[in-house]
Amino acid sequence: MNDSNGYQPTGTPVPILLDTDIGPDCDDAGAVAVLHALERMRQVRIVGMMHCTSSRWGAGCLDALNSYFGRGDIPVGTLRRISSFLDSDELYGKYNKGIAKGYPNRYAEGEEAPDATDLYRELLSKTEDDTVVFVAIGPLVNLMYLLQSGPDRHSDLSGAELVARKARHLVAMGGRFPEGKEWNFEMHPESAAYVAEHWPTGITFTGYEIGAEIRTGRRLHTDTPVDHPVRRSYVWYGGEGGVRESWDLTAVLYAAEGPGDYWDVVRGCIEVDPDSGANRWEPHPEGRHGYLTRKMEPEKLVNLLDDLLVQLP
Image (spheres, one colour):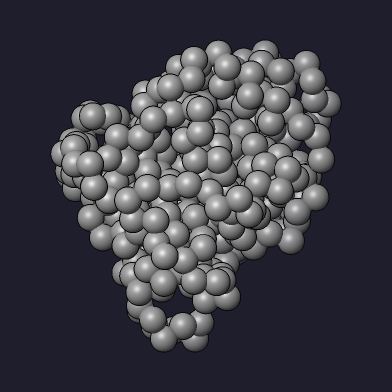
């Protein structure tokens, strides 16, 4: 049964579909590392990963990280519907090109990875009903196109029907709560508004304010090899010894463990302006949406996430 009014892991590995804009910010690479650590701990099972910008290096970067962590078999797709969305190497490719070209993967020179919408539909058609947790840590454009997709060779269901049948919950890093503006929503306001209104399961938002106070990555520079691709991502993004806010890492942790001792969840309904991406919140105890508020001190979460971040394959 869909988790429409809350989210708690069931005690078995959570099947995860990750949607990421990997490249503009190094915390996406950190989130991938944390996700692999959680899989090795048997808390999650990675079903697939999708890249949600037009950068030719995103799929290769994801595939290289997965291969480094021993999971080069994970299906990887990329956005094909827009030809020039966040695709500037100078602005948004501070590390994804280096990882894609410098580490073994299937898409090292930007060869065509599968279309994200098509691959989503294929993977969902093969999963058990009411099980998959989507984790979106970038603009929501891939998820909008999935919802708007029609029947195809993978399934006779529309995209919205397929998600309603197969998905359990969506964890989305986006928004600022209880109201404000945040980068992921601002970059593609139309998709943020569409997904917020039409996604058929419950959604938990990990807002800007959650990850902003949890700065992780320091131990990457001391506890991992110099050629570790996530360490390299953080160096290329922020310099030697740099740390970064944990927006995307916290979303992955929530998907694996739920609120636990880490966060409280405020229930209600989000509204997103389709022109600006600004969001506002309407509280309601039975609302189909939720957003996280701090429960554990940030420094404790820094230590927890850094422990996961530096685990070697």
